[in-house]
Image (tube, rainbow, N blue to C red):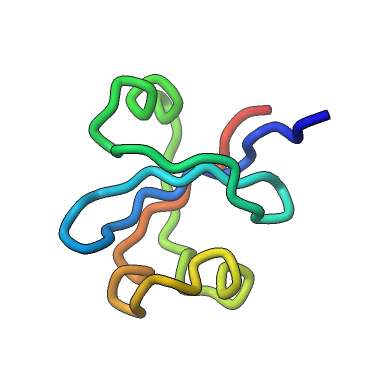
Length: 79
């Protein structure tokens, strides 16, 4: 059984804004264009944090620069 998405991370990569979905253990489930309608629906009423630069995200966001991680927004999704 596939685990539900717990986090939505909006992060820049090579000049494009990506939306990356992660489960509670911060394993990536999906990645898509952050300008999609799904992102609007998923984030409605949620307040993001700027915690993507923290150690808990090191493995999940290893391919991103420090500046990308510091600017990223992390949403905790209602599950």
